[in-house]
Length: 114
Length: 114
Image 1 (cartoon, helix red, strand yellow):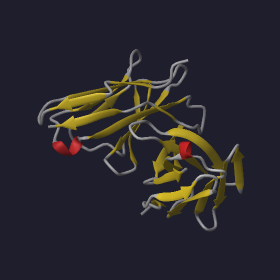
Image 2 (image 1 turned 180 degrees about the vertical axis):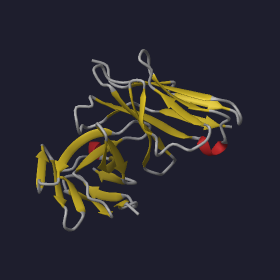
Image 3 (image 1 turned 45 degrees about the horizontal axis):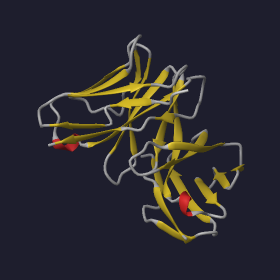
Image 4 (image 1 turned 90 degrees about the vertical axis):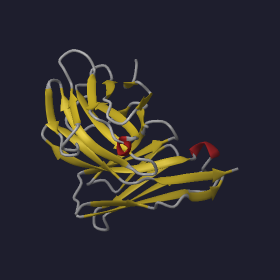
């Protein structure tokens, strides 16, 4: 029973390039959450998605960041024209969505912007 | 504004002693509170959830208390072991639509020395 999968685990991009981070939730989970963790800081909520719907994106920067969770396939967090300040660990979590649940986290993608 | 505070300084204790970590919050009325463990380079792992109408919750060597009057949760690890060394995060819920967004504290790093 696989847990939450994220890939790649490490991603290096140059300033101005695009970064695509993928998250496959646990089997049977229909709710996906993305968080960002800067070095020595806590997790910051970015966006909450269900299949084909963005439920809450109050934590997403207004520009360059977007997220989707298509009917088929993994959830994607996309960062366009990356800057050095985007360097962080990005974690995806999933839950079954039956009311209030604990969230199960993936191993994270560590993005480094050169 | 809403704030969740955990002691940012590392907590160093001797093996066998009880570790006590604190989570304080302001301008918040969470229905429940969760504690997670995070090891370096890994995603958070759920440990315990306590609801607003529960004073105390236990799981093996772990104990969590939740005082909604003081707006504080305490997390105890009894008979601590070096393997308990990690960063511990508290998280409060923010209900929205059909799911729940978690707001995390900055975490407290625990070091258990043999």
